[in-house]
Image (cartoon, rainbow, N blue to C red; front, side, top):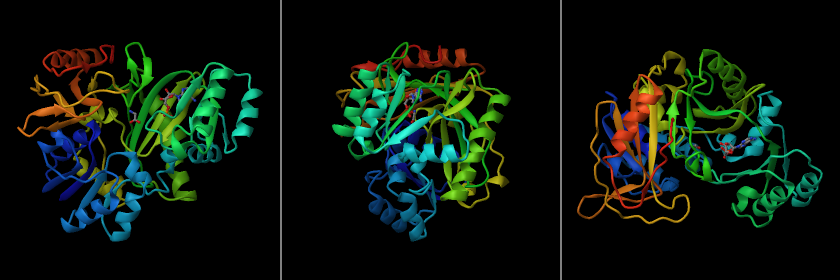
Length: 418
Ligand code: AMP
Ligand code: GLY
């Protein structure tokens, strides 16, 4: 098969790496890719949101299947455009991707289908939101921009004054642009946070896999939120009972809700979950694989990933048994110092040699300079992953391998999976 993979992060390098193991693969293109994907396929200089150019490329190269990594092209309707053109593509339509691109849409679906989540109210009028907050007596409370905000649109407010200032940011100053036209105010959930993933063809769902993500930049979960500084799988509280609960209370009903009331959701459903004292509750849905969760879960996947993608697109996922290995997997992100605020790039990276068969280095913000040397090219630069029989061993192997890698201003959290 000729495959086009859309995206350029660590998630996409991990997907490309997994695709490269498939006996079905004839040729792999990545748009736009990074230095890591370039070593296993052909990078194509097209932005992941330039849908027309991607479509024209897929037509010209007779691509058999396109796989979309990030949320932005999905929300822009890449799947709708490809399907109208007769091209095969793995991912949800823009309408189905509203589960991620509109938090109020996701909340309304969850409410109608009794999917456990934080109680909430949505506002389009800043004055009404203001009046509601003035009368609110429960803190912390959570304010969210409705639309896509690169993981930055969530404010956990400890006091009324913080909530009013978050309202000002989101709805009045519009720091997230139109994503803040609608505001969601919701109950603060306490518990263990984890991300649960399943592949779906719109009707059947695969066996679930879960990971924990480190969102804050600083050790001990301090500092601003990032795209994710590390991850591990399985979560320490993950067992058959919890998996069954999340499947039956969350994943099955959301897939059924989308098929019945909206458009079938085909792709990867990603449920951000809080495991509270009263059971699992949804924090958010995403319409894609997570980054850096993908860098820990794909090394655990026992199947040919192209067979899974194809069976979802052809609505016959029930013919494939998705097999997640029982090992533990850890990934630590190496970032450019300063991330998620301002940082510099263009620094050479040394020490990219693997210490063992169960170790992977997934590239994110990397590229080749004119001499063919790998240099930094983003906030999150690399993720080092290792598999082992338990989480502590896997974390030790990751940190041993990190010692070999150097680039100027390199920063990472030393407490991932600890
Ligand atoms: P999101 O962008 O929706 O993933 O939110 C970012 C992070 O904010 C989540 O991963 C949670 O850690 C936190 N968060 C979001 N909503 C809630 C909530 N209702 N209660 C507690 N924490 C939340
Ligand atoms: N790591 C969180 C996300 O991909 O949204």
